[in-house]
Amino acid sequence: MSVVLVINSGSSSFKYQLVDSGSGSALASGLVERIGQDQGRAVHVDATGAETERTLPIPDHTAGFQVMLEAFAEHGPSLEDAAPVAVGHRVVHGGARFFEPTVITPRVEADIEELAALAPLHNPGALQGIRAAERAFPDVPQVAVFDTAFHQTLPPAAYTYAIDRDLAETYRIRRYGFHGTSHKYVSTAAAAFVGGDREDLRQLVFHLGNGASVTAVRGGRSVETSMGMTPLEGLVMGTRSGDIDPAVLFTLARRASLTVADLDELLNTRSGLKGLAGVSDMRDVLARAEAGDEAASLAFEVYIHRLRSYAGAYIAQLGGVDVISFTAGVGENNALVRREAMATLGFAGVEIDPLRNESAGRGIRVISTDESRVTVLVVPTNEELEIARQAAQILP
Image 1 (spheres, rainbow, N blue to C red):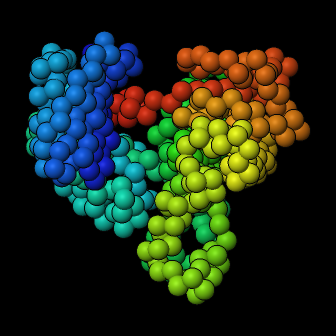
Image 2: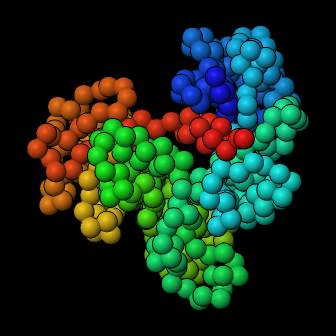
Image 3: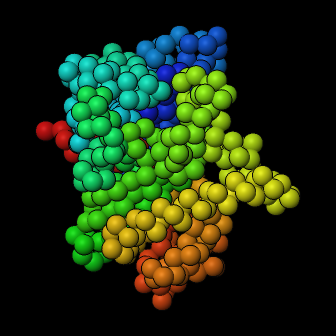
């Protein structure tokens, strides 16, 4: 059994999962949150699904890791019997430096810290988790798996912004892409599911959650993706705007006297579905739309319009498409979004089966008709398993 402890750490919380990377099974999982507040919260779930919860002060990530270790000791599984061979860390931004899972050294930590300038909301929290894990597991290799790594295969024409070349090089202004761990897992699983010659397989993967992105994959390699230098570019998301004319920001700065910080907050937390409909969850948007809320109806239409636009553009870049996969919270569970996103793609050979699309199920399932030239799938993502596999694979 090759067990990996997977850590997804933020500035005030971290999620964990103990994964058997060989079988793919989760042996335990949990959440430690409200770190640094008066009262923290820790939830531990064992392999049977039994859940335990504690409320106690958790001053920092090191204390949080101690709470996690106590949960394993009290509720199992024992970390002596299921000792991790590695601790795998999700790190959002690896810039152009990291294109594969990487054993963490002091030099790697320094690079992650420097790259925090490109991901100030994510990389600092990952570093806190890494350092706490090093204290808790001093003899276990720590491995960083970067969300940007899968997109390091983007061609220059896809990742280059058309701005002053010297300025872009000085400040590392380019498209990096995100959700790479999910896109890699889903595209690999989809390719295995459909079989055939994977070298020429053309895929679109729609990762639709609160954050959302679409990636074009050819022969298992990312060749285009919707997120850019940051996760703000691209599709309409729960609270992020996605694509927007840059001159909108100049206009708001001049006419509404908004500062850079104001604009950052606007586009990241008060835009997308939240900005249009007042709620960020697609289920709430649809409930309001069904009740006659015109703003919610428009929000849904804008969301679908953007999905179709990217689908058409990426099919053109690939020269056609063989497989389209939907994943993440909205992609896996919302039949209406899938139906409407695909409704105009008949020209590309897409034909959705209404009954298959509406039916719930676990695991990978086909939602296209038998006659469809394009296989359309729902593929549940498993970023923790992907991180565990990548971490275990690079160990000697």
